[in-house]
Amino acid sequence: MDITLNGEAKSLHASVSIQQLLDQLSIPSGRVACEVNLKIIKRANYPTTFINEGDTVEIIQAIGGG
Image (tube, rainbow, N blue to C red; front, side, top):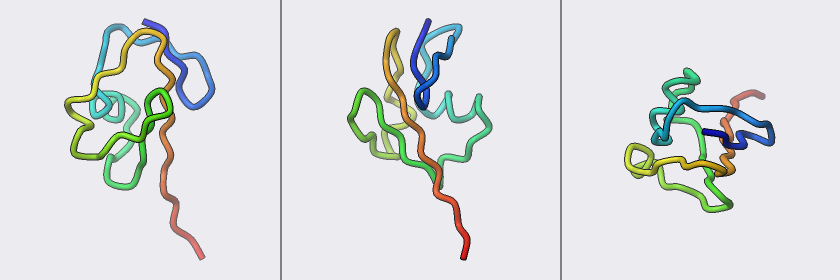
């Protein structure tokens, strides 16, 4: 299954939820915002929102600093 992840082509073996994708990428879900096909997904819906063939996914991580 082919998707676009943060502007780059990525192949997945099967449809996964946003939470599963974050887990595969070793990204903690607490400090990220996710968008699928230009729609921001609420963090509570990460486990139940599935990514499908051709979807465009953006994952934005909050980075602290000063």
